[in-house]
Length: 229
Image 1 (cartoon, rainbow, N blue to C red):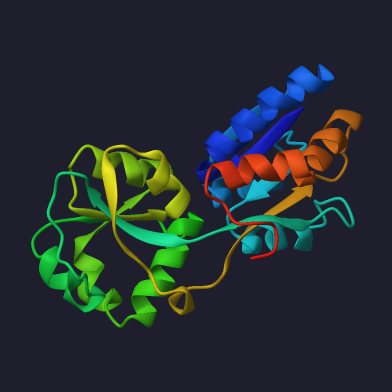
Image 2: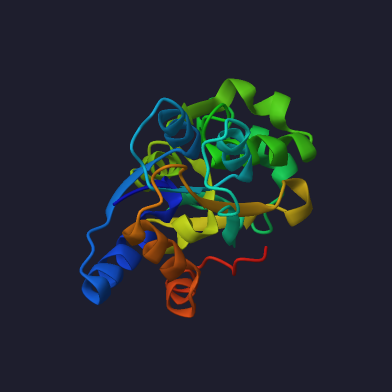
């Protein structure tokens, strides 16, 4: 059974898959990437059983093509958007987003590519809402998923990056410079659905497991909010 899941759910889905396998004996094969990349692969016929997206829009995309099992789509978790910096770097205290263009002057700021990475799309919305998107456009380095953004900041190759709070909490090499105001970007709701024609018995069991109290406890362990954002 194959689960296509957003890169930001790597730790959650990996742990949940391991626990599920021990409990049921069914094998779970996760495939992690940017939600848009995975959605397009499913649209092209990739053999996924379950899709977990960091952006409901990509669930909508597959639903509009008739590629999801009727009634299977739901919100499985939610998250928050943060600006991170290498742990050893100094950041202004208090931090003001309006100062960010000056802070990265001549340097790069890492975000996911807004064209297909939900974290990048949320980042673009937040920067636009804060009125600094156009001032930062020449500074962005656009990456294929949120974990690539985190890795670049961890290595100190950029002074700042935009990731989910759950990613920031997992890393020992970055710190949260500031949390974006919640009103500056759409609610980060993680969608889950079963792929039409691939809703095997094992897939249905894992789908139900992720919704269960035990499955939700794993999401909460890694800093995700509950299924209702």
